[in-house]
Amino acid sequence: MSDLSDLARLRSKNAGPFWVTVDLFCRPDTFDAVAAIPTGVFARRLGMDEAAIRRFDLPSLRVVKISLPRPVVQGALADNDMHGAGVAAALAGMAIG
Image (cartoon, rainbow, N blue to C red; front, side, top):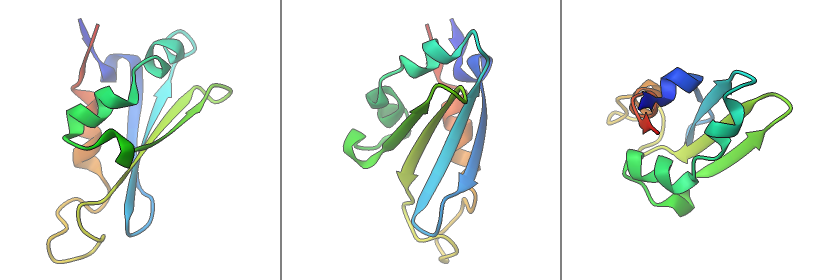
């Protein structure tokens, strides 16, 4: 069994004050496996409702984008993850197999 980080390079980024996006950059031999992961698996890993997640599969770029609403507005006093690094780390350690 491997982790998602074995199949893709993850990069989180600020997608505005209300959203975080994690890009899963895949190798040519891993895109199909990553794209086959149901959105619900990502949602469960993050403790979220699947309907709240926006997902974009971009086969020509070998990228899967996972966007999710921030729990609090970026920059608010309670915001402890300005760029979504915690989200990327949670997904990177997700067991695949």
